[in-house]
Image (tube, rainbow, N blue to C red):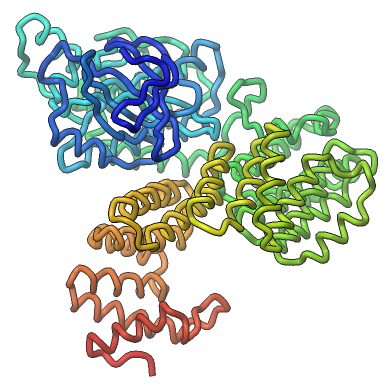
Length: 632
């Protein structure tokens, strides 16, 4: 056992005991080098073959997936062998099920899809990894609403992993057979494969959808034959995943993902359940204090459903980063003749929609457009609506400042009435203005005051981002960015963290620091490209980091996937030329280089890089080196 504040391997400071699991005590600790919380958990060692070999340690430490905790280390102590993994903040799915939470199909589809992605990733490793203990207790729902699969077994010996991970209600029939035979005879001829994990995933979501825990070695009543608030297609997918006969299940997680994607594309209309613990926070905030209930009771049922569905769709899309869809839904409401009278009588609803469009533009870093919509939302608000006035005014000022229009931002401050801005909102504005003026110390001071005076995650994240943007060195920048991530791990924060780590890697520090920084950047780009709505730029930057890690084959695969979507994009072709050249494939490099130059000549968009940009100069040099001429 470890004592509180004990320092293990000069790296992990034990903070407190989290609880006792089947293998022993679990501790919360702090990684003193990475400045982040980790969990130290004892590995069950009553089966000797379950203890990890060095090869297994290296395989597991090299796993990187946004819906898996990172494995950092294995520690040998007198009391046993321990694994060190990321501390995942959130609430496990089992807790929500116990509390009787009702889940929307949209929520469950997202979590089901995310865990299926993890299984596809684990099963496709050069040495396939089977989790062998998927259950509601091992699926954490983060504050951002994502699912993370925790507690996968350490041993890559599938027989012992199957034995260690048996949770009878969720274990596949073949896994239960292995556990029984190993216990009775010490060996088993039964084989575990990916279909066992697929069964456990299906059984877990069967429990979430019905509230009924599956019975071990028993064929449960099919979901599609029950009266549930879920589409027939979704029920069929879960039923097939937990088929008793493994031959009837999906043969791989990849096949399961394909079925989910087809289901999502064919079922865009989800039931609305507002009174659940897991309801969308954004949607709830939009409904509170609004006149929507008046609208819902004074019109036809069809119109009610259409309005609520569009509103729900807009806020759900915005929370997931699908800004295009969010704006589309907001504009449909704003421009719909059927909602004209309602919005006229309820200006706060119109203001909320305009503000949401501003949020979408802000997420896309289109700060000038965002500022315009924020200000329009402010002007649409009733004069006596102080609840949202400070928020809308603050967002307009911040967006104008971020766009570089400091005079407009300061004009809005001067014209604001004394009670228009809350104190903490003013502190955030001062932090952003200081960052735009390059005043590092002043910005840091204002940002810290925001963090000290409010628990509002959005405000704290924006304040920390402002301080990071004006930091004079990568270490300080990363310190502020990690603070921002603690409050809101959105795309803006992840991109900033990725870029900062790449910059740190380019500072010619020690090899270990450079490699660690590149791995961190890689992790952030994996998260960005695994998102439902990654950008082309995210993919290109991801490929560049892969090249910096000498993983040119992976970079080419990632870029070719994007080339299939953007077949004549010079920036993708250019990076393919660089990656092919770095891996020594001169023929492919020459072809991509030639195509990139032609695509660049044909591209007349404002975003096209100029002839004197570093990228185009490097492309031209590569063309000359390969003997294909270059840009004339």
